[in-house]
Image 1 (cartoon, rainbow, N blue to C red):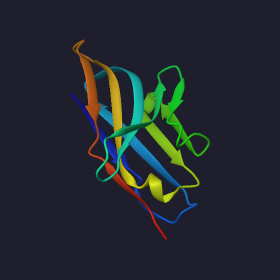
Image 2 (image 1 turned 90 degrees about the horizontal axis):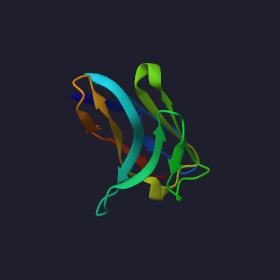
Image 3 (image 1 turned 60 degrees about the vertical axis):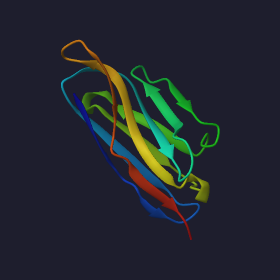
Length: 120
């Protein structure tokens, strides 16, 4: 199993910045992709950004140019730098990993979520 621990959420004013962190632990052999998703009240969970083990990234159109995803493979960690935050970015943000356990089994894991609130 893989455990994901997220941190860095909070309350910020419009135009402000936050940095989310997520650390994976457990019987990890490899992690192919790491990413962030978010879910606002009354809405479906949506992709924010993903990063592959080789460094390729994907972003939702709504966050391009404002958010930057990065990862530290040695620490099995992924980060999301969020700049110029807008009220519509308010949501619970979830970390996600897709990889392989030491047993050889594939594994898809989710964090517990961290609240990001953008409000004046």
